[in-house]
Image (tube, rainbow, N blue to C red; front, top):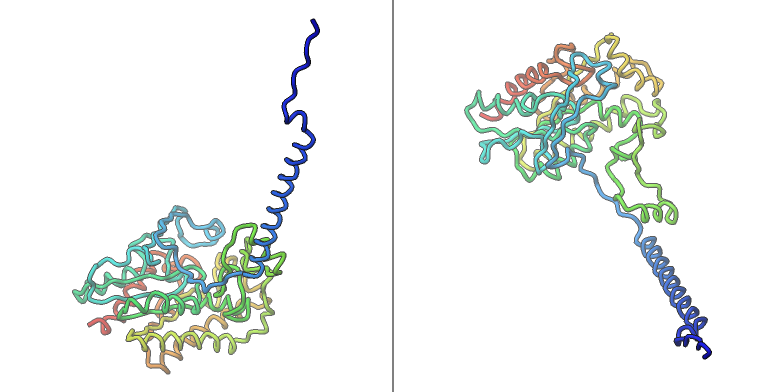
Length: 366
């Protein structure tokens, strides 16, 4: 008996046709995916990129503990090599902030890292201590808020003032800036110069695909962060900004700060910035700032003159606008007993400054 061949099903009989259909479906799917991708790309190109005004502040609700960077430890006077805690409340103020639920009055400090006082204990920072000192003297409940953030200049402070301080209706707003404005203006030539980390106008962060589209199809490079030296490759020629030009730009922001505060019933107070820019610097401080002014092609004395020119603007505006001035540049000794580097207080200096500021502000809070 002869064995019969297995019977073929319809798919086996028409395998070529089946494969042709399968490949056609796959091809159509791929074509559809390509068309969809083209549409997405076209829509993204047409949509462009989004920009926003940056509110440079300590990150709300953050709780960080980090030691000073090694390059700072190499030159600092008496700074401890240990983690320092920096906590921030939900509104971007450094904790302790709203210590009273219903205060009798509030005071807000605006500035950069010299106001932030990162590398010291939470209850050693002078903005906090000023509130406690005023309470002890006046017997009133005082909330003192610290908006300080490393790298902030006066333009950042103006945005913070309008963005979150005005709605609080504090009794007093205190501004102290100098060295950050000097650096930004001297290196970049103006407050509105595009910059990766300190520019006012920033690009929204996108996923890698849209970033590629924006850069390659739109041709927009964006404000990507610069590693290491954040100003690398962005400098203008130092001689393009004279002390008079620096002072003029700085003055406009100080005057605007005073005007905005008064328009909203807030008492403005200006402070010159404490520092150790004496005629001659200790060797460790020379090592700290030499790369900065050498890169600009200016001497230390020229750098010091530019710095002093901005502190003089604070004095001049305070006198012209009849604003209270706390002249910390002249009141705080230029010594390692109070500052661990050229402009940053140590805990002892913070207590010293808090005493000066609190005594100066007592008549305002009476």
